Length: 385
Image (cartoon, rainbow, N blue to C red; front, side):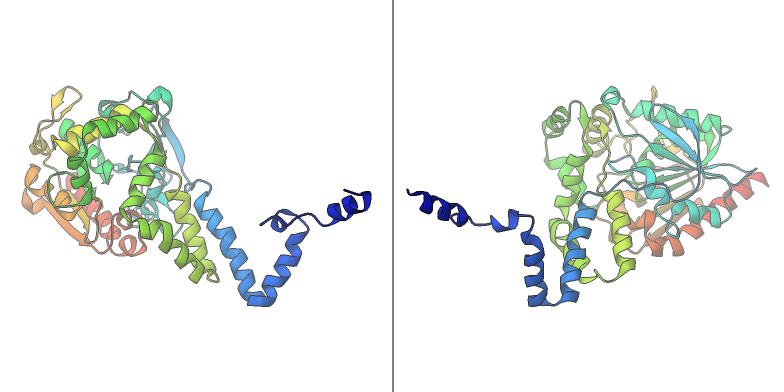
């Protein structure tokens, strides 16, 4: 090849598909062409959508919405205190879910917080179990470890509490109330699977159809922990179109609605940041509760004793969601026949919406939880009378 042809060749390199877009200076020209084609406003919306889609796919973790202090630092949790200064009365302990997401679901956002709602309903002493993500050192923690540390927290609060159990926190609270009935003044179970054989939900089907080795292999792959990312993938696969397609379509449709975008960002900061669980705890829950239903049968052993649910005789409030496909209403309301509480002291409520909405949905927080707060206050007043 002559010197001239070599120069010409270097000035005009062969076309490589996609190469132009890898050259930094090309971007302004490509943007200008695209703006001309679709219009400036739509182009700006498209850019905003791309940025927001990236934000909600890998967001920063959600913080606590309400001011609080850490009252106790234990191996499994931080006991967070949201109480008013010099508050009196029996403490209300919210046992947040420990099932793969952060406890901040109990204090999700200003104006959309269970803690805030309970405080506004007249309950001055409100605390929340802020469960820690499992480290490798925590991989062998079992259910007893968590029951024992709830007991430490209750004793530190004076030895008696009103327990509010959310989802997994509900079956844990039921275990605690059966093991230490004298330390529980009332029991709220919201979206809590007490009888896991009741109803026909997908969790029941999955737990019975998959062999234990499936769950054991997942824990083994996590180095002895059940990794939050693996659980999140499982939850998403229950509604793949919603999680992988619809939410992005909805985001694009509302990209000019700043309120919608802010709400979406807040939810994804909670949802897209799962936490790891101890493998032993997770496998114990799968085998003993969801496969063999030992808590409902009175066969589960907690802190050295079989847990007889008939020992629970305090007032109980049962809350289920009419569209909840994680914990069906049958699994929640079955507690009425399993507990020792007289029927006249059991309140049942079916709220509109699904599982997560029971704890942080605007409608449920506005319509149902104030009633529960007043109910707890009444239980406290009747006991003190």
